[in-house]
Image (cartoon, rainbow, N blue to C red; front, side, top):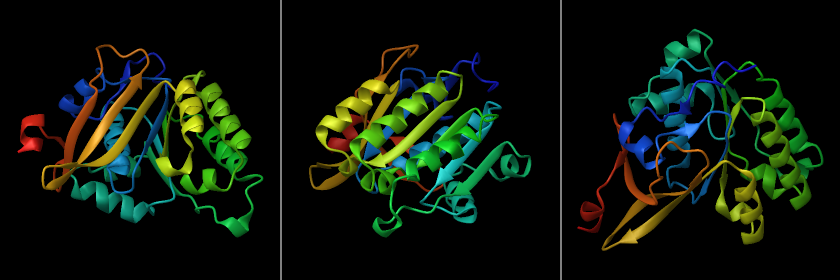
Length: 235
């Protein structure tokens, strides 16, 4: 049984960002993170991993986006160094092979769910990303996968699932959001003559404080996610 089930919230390790999330995401939550390419989804999950490890939680990252080496290098460049946690066994990183059309998808999500179940001793499991799995699965399989993940989180594990928004139609997004405890949407929006990244906090069930609505941010080397005040974003 995960050790953090009675231990409060999942934190990004950044007080300003956590405040926008309503104080952090309660443990035992199913978190859905969706949005455009290059809008900051992966960096946000890396913040969640880093913040959780700093609080003493055990984290597994299942990634189609990075190898262990590239993950450590990228997080290190954002001042989110987790190499010691990896050496101590508190962090596990596994590379998932992205699904392709010719692979067939009849058992893809089932295999991914098995991989999540295998991390039963971990406190937080991050899957980045589901996009290729969803693209080659039926709506029934996708809904079933989220329902099974919700059953796992009811036992105390926190699961964060990342995907591109284009992998779902609007009706599917509504159904998935209703099942999840937290839903974050990332986008790149025009603001004057420039583009800015935004995080929409759609919901955080059980948050300790009221959640922020839409947050503008940037990703800076050596810093990670940095909130941009609305007035500055408009300038």
